Length: 429
Image 1: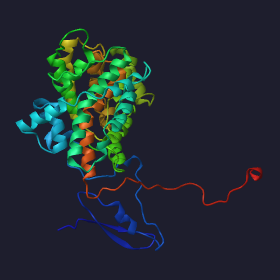
Image 2: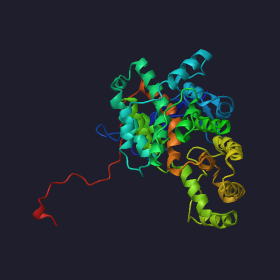
Image 3: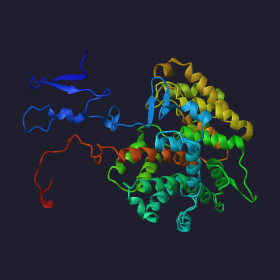
Image 4: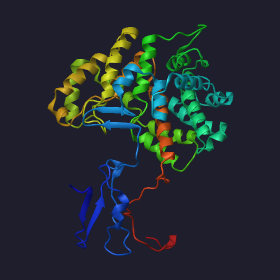
């Protein structure tokens, strides 16, 4: 029977080392024994952007990018999107199992009754300029929440952690909606505890003068499914930020603010916005061949195609594509949809993209849905942050309770000058 080890021969010294293999990985610290002398630091691995480095053990989300598989705690994303709702999925991510009826009722009650925040937070939001980006407001206000809940620093108290889970998941839609209303100059709408999680979010976003807001069921369900699809996605940039910052043991609000900052970037949470910009630049179906030609010549990028992990069709994109048609029956067809469909058809038949395994990802159609609901581009990334909060918190707690947890502190390869002596300014050439 083959041994679960890796044999390495150092050609500098002729020495051979046997490194254990566990779950298809070797421990980077095992490489440190490979030295040319006793005072040598030892071998390190070099992996820019951590493209082939496992930074943790996790039991939350599984992705098989080659086969287009995404599982939350073992459940296929397709089943959860069809049969579940976001609050149930959030519970699953945090606690590892789907809730019983009584557990779900208690969970929903706790989330519903933590949606309102301190009035001083509203004043904080009022302090932003009228043209402030909603994501910047969300980043700031979530960080500010740590000053309102000082007990959140008791991160090793399970009851305290649970209360912060309730608060963060409950307040994110309220903060997001208030940020949006502030940018468009509309009065804030307070939560309605009679509505569902996503129905209440739509209420705070769109209620005008009606006494009781009634969300459209198709739109409400579409948002719920989009929230499920965005709830977690393994060790992406923002989740890595949540774990990395969390390893220094701050409160979860501070760590979540760091994750939001990572999500703010156009290469992460802002990708669906870039898709809409691309479709707008193309302008019409007849201009797609010329656009494809420029992309293949390296003169542009096909936004919404390809993924760092997926080398097959993103399973979330298939679900969103179906949702888009259902939403458009209510809102009217987004004029960019025909361009998107034709662009996808042409790209999936082109050997250039087939060989590079570039398929539509989750961002390709989600922006079209949000835009058809009348939402501005600036709010799109905020809509990503709301559901991802449950995934961030699940990953944060898993990191916190990991027996191997240590503060994150990567190594570097120093390429600067050797030691040199200081020269006074009058003697420098």
